[in-house]
Image (cartoon, rainbow over all chains, first blue to last red):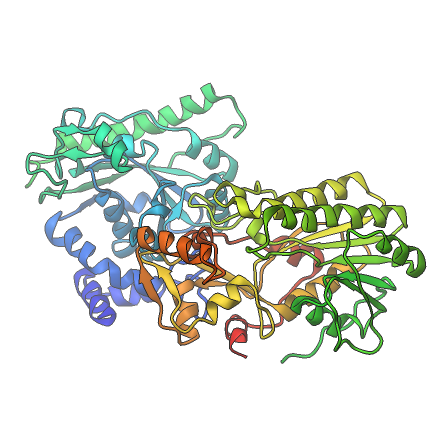
Length: 277
Length: 316
């Protein structure tokens, strides 16, 4: 089963995918995992259905992915949308199959994700970690690439009328970038907003069920429509300053990143032929 | 079995070991009595001890312990006399663990003991859903947040920490090892790994750290070395997903949804049919993985058993 999925990944990835993924040298012990529980073999296999979405369903178009540094610590900061986090999967796949050499992006997940059965171990095997400052520090020090959505669920679970309006950015990522001296690559995701247009978010019911949100689409479930994804990568931004600066200063710098992401989104919206085309 | 650790020189002499008759105490004695004079104190008898080891069957809270300090003048204390028995009533566990520790540490100050090594546990951090992947020594001890039964172990650790700062004249080392396993160990994690059909929480598979009992004994010897002082996490040869550990042992896990397993375990525990409190299920769901790099850097700590050997040690 796993072998079949891996073959499917190599096939969907196109020529040379097998060789490129073979060059990934993630540390692993005799049980196939790194200390975080990331399993590269599992990841290549589990990527297959998502890579099908990437190539055939969402037909992801990349713009300027060469702006992502080939190595070294980096934070990818993107807008978040679409009710279910397919945008994270698409960005990770872009770095995995359409970068040479490939890069692993570790997405930072919300603190309640480890309480979700099946999802918690699945995400852990894919190399995702809970977004605590301690985890980020450690991964940046190890020269890894982190994928951050500073809007969090506020961005993910927006209703359709608020599409492509970026929510305020939390400042945690800014502090960590300054501390680690890591560049920030802004990423504008276009298409994901229309994948599951939510009419309302039943917040009280969500709270009752212990969910972060309960979006209702015209067809009830937040299943993704075959929208055309565009990922726009911006020039790496480098900030200087003290990570202990007061909040106003950090908010200003985080705002600059937000402006950069909003710029990429606006440019992408203006340039796309249509939502599904 | 690997070669025994070369005895670090010069070790304090004699060394008083509390809780010596436990399985870890015995593993320690096997290594320690070759390097220095060992004096054991435990409520339990220690009949099959090596000949050179003297043993006093005493409760740490009794006045006769003071007498023992006066007569034998120990240069160091290794404090293993800590109960992790979930069946012990809380007041008794608190008295034995916290009051016992306070008493014996006070005696150390009073009698000029130069070195104190306290064996705490990485479980004081607690398996919490929002834990970082690797917990450093500065992480708040939050285990009682979800399981109040361990608050005596946290209080003990915090008392030892305040002792470390209040008494700079005593070199205090607090070790927080991850889950100790081994052929003779009978604690909750090793008993769990010995089950042929262990229940797991459906949909969860956390990373787990294990350390071999002989490696813990080796670390206790390192901590005895003059010059070392501080709080150290103790990680064995690494970590693996719970599922991989159970597969290595040839177990057939029985996944049960959390909402069924917890109430079932609560009933079974109350009825005295199992010795795993339901709160310990958190260990099968969430991370309680620690960063052991400080002990490697400052104590020169390295495990001698591989991850596979450590896992398989429960089979012996």
